[in-house]
Image (cartoon, rainbow over all chains, first blue to last red; front, side, top):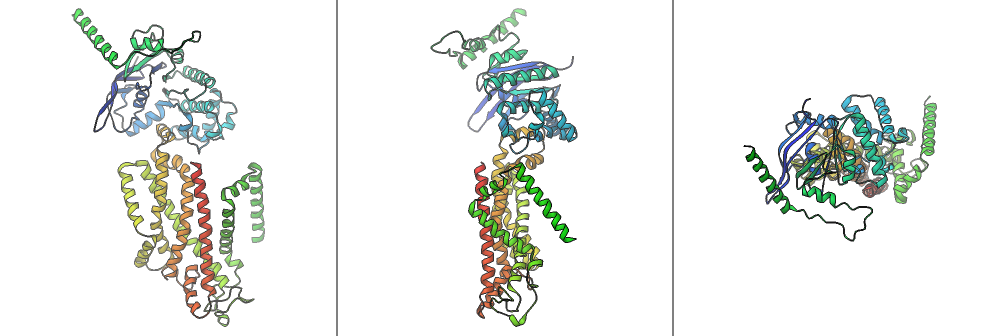
Length: 295
Length: 300
């Protein structure tokens, strides 16, 4: 129908200092439709988190950006203060890696959950609390009423991450950004939290941009995968996990250790920037040849 | 009627205390652990002064301004437990009434300085950059001038009276609060939860007051109490110079001054008692402030 929910078009971000210039995002292009889940994978420093930060427009001041990010057709980079505030508050929810650091320790869980509802949506406090309790129930937090009176330090990491998810769902955003939401949790809590996030997302028809190092997890709960390397998306689509075509993706998927195989040394990625540039040059050449052939 | 009112008040206090004890059995123990032995002693000393100041109209043996000329400059007698001053006014009563101003004045000074200083600090920490630079620069300038000088300037312009001195002195105390709070608020400003609140769409004012302020509150309180001790001395000094409250109002600083003259006439008790009272008040406030400060630090 209309424009996709989120469009990132040729996004560049560079950090420019007096001495040198670091190009951290080199033309990232992504689209995300309503109700779709996209997994963003790639090694550390490949620009995954930077991309989500750019979507929230919370890059540090020194960044120079070009390209465009559009949310429901409006350019995020061109929003004024109030538009941006409303966009952050109502349209997009973000779930962080470390829930404990992102919740104010001096406020109760109830304050944290109801705050945005009361302020942004004009909901009465007791109504907001009722909704919070209901939602906590849905994300699998037991004794929800009691939890509202507790402080963040009284909750375990997994529980707190569920509270975070609940806080994001409460304001009914259209898009959820999840920046490694399970990395700080232990393995059992991880699968629980992920299952809840996935279930709630599907039930509400929300879009999800999911960042992770965990390829299986991304494949399991996302419709498409996008693989990042050196600030670029090297390959994306639904096929990536089962039939990768890009050499980096192939190596990345091949590097996963298998549980029924004993290895003395784990595989090491051969792919590097040099190969990356060669590959890019070759792709460009092929495209040109094809174009010429067509002409 | 008053009696039944007090009784009812005492009853509710007792109920509240019992309820607090039932909910949180360790509350009083916790408090004593927080304050330590010296802190408890200091609190007790301060409580004596606060209570005798607050209840002065009921418990003081004489009107503080009533001259009993026959007992002028007398030592301790059964009539005047601490003796009387040069005009025969009862020293114990004057001490009690004097403590009112000596405690209330500095409290107002610190209250004003803390509110203004904390707001300045939060504005600086939230906006950073140029706003922070300008505010810090102003604070540095204020720092260079002792608070007492501001009080003297205010007196020079508006004449000697307590409100003038209080306002003037509080300007001098703003940087002491603001600088410490600014540092703490800057640290909180960089915490992820502040960013998370910002992304939730909260305003800068909302985050500063609702998210950052509660987190720096122990430091604000500790700094305020520590400064209170200094404010007591400064205000007493201004009174001693005769630029604060005017006689015949009883004030500890003024009593040291008038006791100074009595001392030459053979009665040292007025100056010593008033001076000792100031020392005790300042000591107890400083000890409590130190405990609060070290508690605030250990939270980090």
